Length: 231
Image (tube, rainbow, N blue to C red):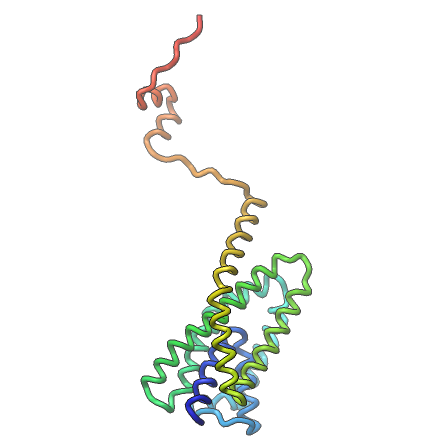
């Protein structure tokens, strides 16, 4: 496997893991076990039937969880602690045959890519959940699955093409992630206004205590004089 193929596989696994880790593991395991690709030595375990079965089971669970509004966001939140570390480790394992320095580099860049793709997916889903109809969740979920399978296949069979597309994805993410973040902040601001209204901050300090027990003393405390009573 040449350097371009190795880099494409390493970064492709990290990118795809941030979107759907279990689909990525299933695709790599099946390709390796059926002889359609030669997995790096550190990733050969993925073609074991037990690993494929476990990843396939979790993919089925995610397939349904990912299509229910609200549940998908909870699932994505929990998987922030799964997809990102797994993407980084798998990226490093894919390039471990080159050198220890290359392995650490792949770990860092793979973690960044997995974080980026995971953030783009989960942030988009939060905004999609604001839509009252459920079909957009199904469309987004199926699209993500197709993109992951197609992306891994492209990284394996057309590595140069994949690296060009990956560079475009990174540029798109730099432009899109701040907009998604602003959209999420605006959404939660509307929800707070809708359900809670504007909540007054509790007053603290000596003035609050004086006002509570003797309002007249507060005016004296601030140097104000009480207006004369009308006769």
